[in-house]
Image 1: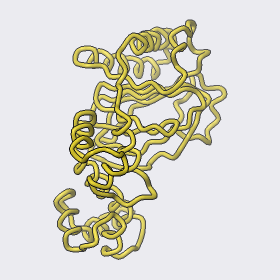
Image 2 (image 1 turned 45 degrees about the horizontal axis):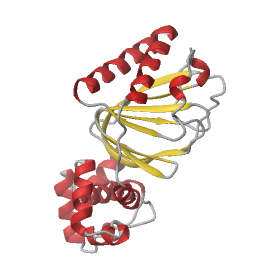
Image 3 (image 1 turned 135 degrees about the horizontal axis):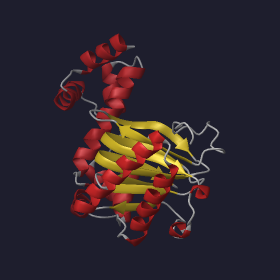
Length: 268
C-alpha cells in the first residue's frame, strides 16, 4: 500500500495502485487552487458537503453533495472553484481491480448523482474505504471500489445543459473580468430568463450569486497576493466604483478590503 500522494502532477505515480484522502475546505472558498494535471491513474471525487467545480477535457463539472466524478487516465483536469467542500478524492490503477468490466464505459469523465439514501450509503462507503486504506486492507478496498463503480455504471448521470456548462466555463475564466447576466446570456445566444432558469435549476444558485462568488474570490486573491490599490482591485473584478466594491466586499466577507489585506499580511 502506497503512502497517499497529493494531487501533484510532478509526483511519480508509476508504482501507485490506489490512494484516497479526505477533502476538507470547510469554511473556505477558492478558485484555481489546483493547476491542470493529468495522471496515469483513474481519478475520483465524491462530495459530501459544499461544492467543487472541476474542469476535465475543457468541460466544467459542478459536483455538489452526493455527486461523484470519475476522471479517466491521462485526462487533463483542474479544480476551478470550491466552496465549503468536504468528501474524498483519490485515484487507482486498473491493475488494482480483478474485474475491469465496470470500466468499459469510462471513455470520458463520468459525473454521477446519488440521491437521498443512496447518497448517504455512498458517503459511508467512501469513509470505510478511507479507513481501510489507513489500515492497509486492500481486499476490502477492491470490493468497495468495485461496488462504487457498479453503482455508477447503473446510475443516472447528471445531464447539465450546454448553456449552463458554457456559463460556468465563462464565469470562471481567469482571463475575463466578471460580466453581467445580459453579457453571459448574449454569449450563450439565449434569453436572460432562459439562462437564469437553467443555471438556477442545475446549480442551485442564481447567475448573480455565481458572479458575486467569483468577484469575491478573485478580489481576495488580489488583496492577499498583490500590492494593487483597492481601487484597482475593484476594477479588476468588474466593479469600477470603489465605494460600492468596499460595501459589497464587507457584506460578503464581514471585513473591509483593507482589513482583509491587513489580516492576510499578519498571517504571512
